[in-house]
Every structure is written in structure tokens, then in C-alpha cells.
Length: 108
Image (cartoon, rainbow, N blue to C red):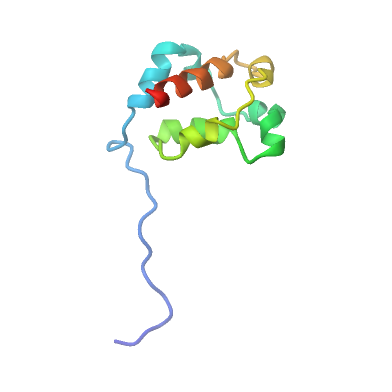
């Protein structure tokens, strides 16, 4: 068969029925305000650690909702717990407590 320079790539589709939501459920139990998050990005825009490193609370929130837990502990270690994200949130999400909760869950 003749090669045309094209190949079929693996699917990047996320199957939400097969995702492990256990981490997300544990966070919601400890901090129900996480459900209020609309991913506006205000937290990431004001993040002190985000200005120095590639840390992004918004990206981490998306990873947790997708069930992608590989590398989360390393990412959340960059957070300086300054609380700017909590103060700026228009929906009143306690992002600082969410980060503390995730650290607690992942360390156990």
C-alpha cells in the first residue's frame, strides 16, 4: 500500500463515564464551595506562585474534574497559600481550603 504521509492518531477524547471521580468527591465533602467554581481564571491571574512558576489553580481544578490525578501533588506543592485566590474569587470559592484539602488527601 502506498504511503501518503498521513497516519491515524490515537483518540484524545475523554470518556467521562470511565473517570475516577473519588478525589473530586472527597474535596466536595470537605469544601462544598468548589461546586460554585465557574473557571473564570481570577484565581490564576492573581496567583503569586503562578507568576514565578507554571502553577495554575484553574488548570489543577480542570485536572481534578477530569479525574487526572497524576502529578497533582507536585503541582500543588508550588502553592504558597497566600490566600489571594480566595479573596479575589467572584463566587466565594475557598480555594485555599481546597488546596489544603487536596494536600491532605494526597498525603494519606
